[in-house]
Image (cartoon, rainbow, N blue to C red; front, side, top):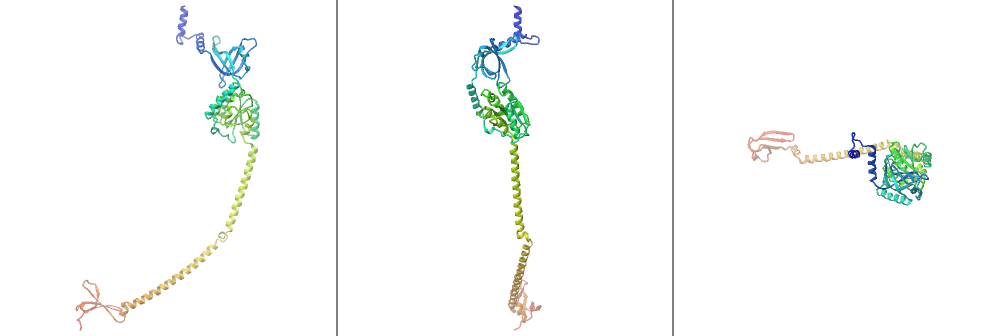
Length: 419
């Protein structure tokens, strides 16, 4: 009694280096915590079924379709046998199970008491709900889709190993452009492992600076086979990729959600091989055509310029460049002569007018009168200015006078007045 009480007390206390818990105690505590969870509904994909004839228990491996996580499921064998349609690897199911921790092995599994296969109708309904959600978030919008490079340095290809899709993409792309460089990453393209492997391959190729476009290719298949390409995780990873992504899934009628998220949707892998690279023959023919057009355009331009030069050379100003100068020089000389004659005529007329004015001035001026023997007598007035003597009463005897005659002037003194 005292020993049991002591053990209970030890396990109730926190574990320390001095007071560690036994393995059984840790396992029991983990089992207690897990058992308190109760029964849960779990959805996943079956990756392995072990149902041996004659046994009462079957074992399943249930995998998360979008992550690398799986759990073991145990159930009565009849649950597996009674499923309609029969369970197979890759099937999507919903399981009602209770988490169970086995103390002896230290393992965790789910003990199922009900298994419900997810039918095609339910899968299509879920895909449609996801389609509306992604469309509302703008992941299908045309404006976010990027244009593929004209000639990529490298093309990443995600597809199944040795698949017809891989062959179709490589053969058609290399037939169009033999120098195209591919980096092929083989992954699962159906089943529970497909989405995690494709997402990892997409991340690897997106981080490669030599890869300019990524192709995700798969051949046709049933709705269940193509389910990974309508997975939300994969669609969001493609939308977040920095490298343009091409979707080439199935045949023309197949349309998983990846087709709407990708930057380019190709109807088949063969079509993808033709769309990611140009046709070397077409481009060579286009180069030859453009070169011929350039040659014709250049020849036409040269011919036009030659004709223009001939026209310029044939113009009189270039054919006889001195003739206009000589003609203008003659015109200038003529104008100079006309100007000289006009100036001489104007000067002659003005000289004649000046002579006539001089003659009239001489006739009317005092000089002519003085030349006939007259004289002009001047005296100094009260202000000291010279004034013309007009009367003998203006001066007294002895007043200095200035007598101007035709050829000069003399000084005189006024004498006595005469009657």
